[in-house]
Length: 118
Length: 114
Image 1 (cartoon, chains in turn green, yellow):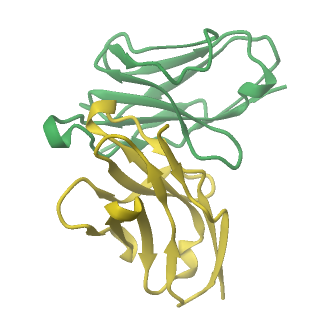
Image 2 (tube, chains in turn blue, brown; image 1 turned 180 degrees about the horizontal axis):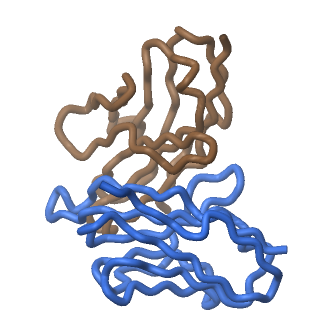
């Protein structure tokens, strides 16, 4: 079956502009995660959805960042008034969140969207 | 604070030699541990994971890792490295009470000499 897909693969924008990054998770996966990976660093958690609701948005750096998942499948990460420091690869992952000891399942990652803010 | 440390930013090994990549974590809850590999232009691929039970876990591509609670470590090993193993390797930790979000180390870049 298809894996996690992300569009666009590359996005170049100007400082101050608004961008949307899309994630299509693996069909049936209830949990969806967004991470940001800066050059030379490991991925950094941004936000996590269980179904349609954001269960944990503690990683969003500020109120310019917002994410939605209205139907519990596709998610969109939205960045307002982009800044040069937002340049990074934005990764999306999904998992079939289990229960109890299996509440932490394998996360399947998409190829990422490389965002460049000029 | 929760953290994952990969002390080696870059390692070079000869093809056929053994490999060990280090990972140390600081985590208040019972940790679940993962190793991911990232090749240039590719997404993160899971190599192996530890949830509970046997502390020596086997993964794909001939990799294994050992969980040592007393040392807060989860080092990745491979007995004989292949040129195709050259990539970036990330250790990550999560827990049940964190909803599955992962904290990653900064990564170790592996180069393989012919």
